[in-house]
Length: 314
Image 1 (cartoon, helix red, strand yellow):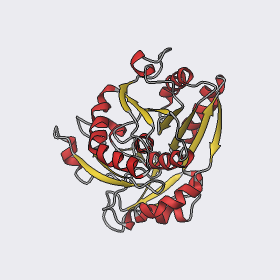
Image 2: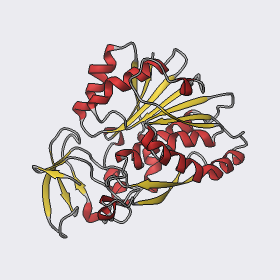
Image 3: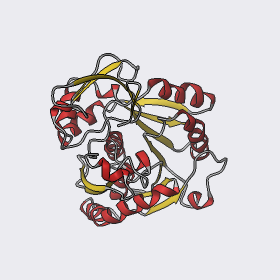
Image 4: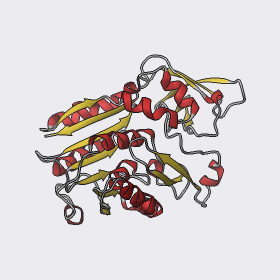
């Protein structure tokens, strides 16, 4: 947590080890810049401190209790199990610290909405049997959505910046046997996977990436939180989208001004159309698998207020 002028500038991290004393109370719009109260995070028991928070609740599968180790030159990581509802698959994912000299930032950890996107595409493509290839943009170290499609016997191309892809490959290797076992249980032939570097914003898709196409589905999770990346992402989408495919874009609400800018200031200037998809029922099914603080928080909230999934097409 980085605090400056009473504002947390990065994230609030939940983990299994944190108690309910670390609950967040919110009023009104979760992303409107209103004051929130955090209790139990970095304070003595019972202490309360009002801060402005750019991120509501993030990845619950990661603990930064050893943050001091991470800040050193020794990279701190742990593994976490991710279970699915739609398929008999359990992933064992290496998670990397958000901090430290060897960190790749947010790309090293798993975030809630990636799991939600995975469950959504599982339901959408459950009966798909013919040739199908998906590409995941900004996949990070834990591309759960793409790995779910891989378990279904579908081909997937995982893309991100070069510095993140070694972590992607590690998680693909350590879960290959589990994915192939699930494919056999589903009576499906194993899919093919490829890992390629892809920098957004180029007019043409790199030859190494395009060679694996054409792409029937584009996945993109938690990639619009920085305004400066919007034009680059849209440029890449414009090179990948056709009349025969679509992009499933998912994100957790953090800054509504930035998120609206993606759709209203950048995407609106193209021929692309976007359509919201409700994930309320999916989240309700997934909730028992999540940490208790998150269960209690969302049990009285509308998940569609905090997690967004859009279909983008031409």
